[in-house]
Length: 245
Ligand code: PEP
Image (cartoon, helix red, strand yellow):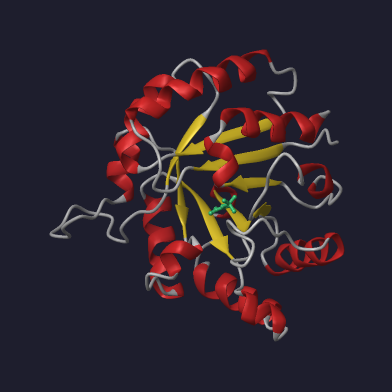
């Protein structure tokens, strides 16, 4: 239970069609009547195809929309299949996820991520900057070194930190049902906050209605990034309710 200002980011990944938007009615109704709605920031990050229709759906609410990635180039250009931050903003996004492990796995380097963050900020988007270690890095006790590197390189020459939120997402936890131990997660979040001073730090990785009470005992977490469970409005609502009740 908390009275803290918390972020709840719904990462829909490559799921959802126009039909899926109907499921948001339930969430909109809940959030309008939710007494603690001024304590919480909800950001839905759908696939790019749903950004604009979702913006329309959320028009009369405080719910914000984020994209899931962007191209590093701030201007238009010959980059087939790519979309830049300016284009995402023009269709209603106010945030963009950058550095998600599913994109790092496809070859995104820290340098590219740094360029994308700079480009997004210059285009007026806020950034959800993802970092996190693999299971092998965790087992060989390289987590801190890795996070340190991701933060230093990812945020290189960036001062505008009020427009960036960090999402700590251990790769071994994403989609696996596993979450870090309480003490371990508290210490890692603290480590990130010492390294990246004055940043909000969220946790992401298998957050669900069953483990949220446990996660809420960790008082240095500023919110959650939620993948699988955010696609089911009932589960997403449950997670938010349990955080405040
Ligand atoms: C994610 O991919 O950002 C994520 C948190 O996924 P999940 O909640 O499904 O582990």
